[in-house]
Image (cartoon, rainbow, N blue to C red; front, side):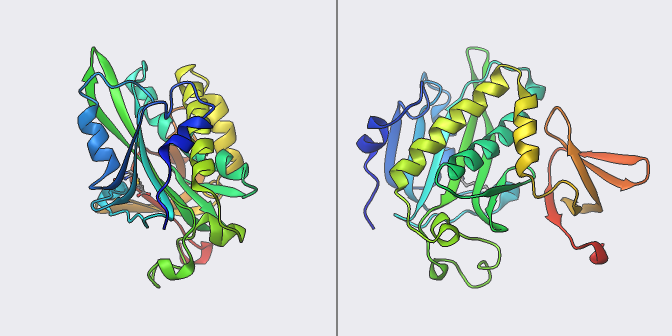
Length: 266
Ligand code: BTN
């Protein structure tokens, strides 16, 4: 598989800062890990670390994330948000909205599962891992890691994963140019991050709700050893998922795994 040409990415980029500094690796442990280390230096907001493959790609909840070389996108963006800490989780939801919007530009119809899994035809094609980095000059740093399955075929996924995961090519029926997908992703990520910085989280919420596959569904929330089921009824102004466990009792979910369950299995 041909590696991506980083010059081609920067040439057609329509962003202000995202991707203007771009580090490209053929193999790395984890783009998030490297950027978390670089965040202590003077490196500017919007810098991107991109890798063809990762040997220790990390997912949410301590899971692993595998990156098919030449067929997927694995990158992290450095953010230095001037935000009250309680607004930081909003970046995670804004990123999912951005990915969905970018995929829609390629004619794909994306759904979002709380907080930020992006799905096509009910299968996950993108995962997002947002992590706090070291503060620099009293400004927090956040590393936004994005993994997208772009051109994998069904055979690229282990059989147990096939009902759950997909790629843009599998869902859309055609291979896509990773350079174009990345440029669109960076543009949309910068746009929706801007909404969070400008305290326009209502816009993120509106766009998130429109694509949600979680709201209105019965869900099982797993937080370590604790779990409960209920109806996902909304997201609040901080991005927390609101789950009605019984009449008059709504729990706010800020972390954990949310599984969609069939009504009769609740
Ligand atoms: C998830 O569990 O859904 C989140 C997956 C996030 C994977 C991306 S790939 C680029 C970045 N580097 C990592 O190690 N993880 C994120």
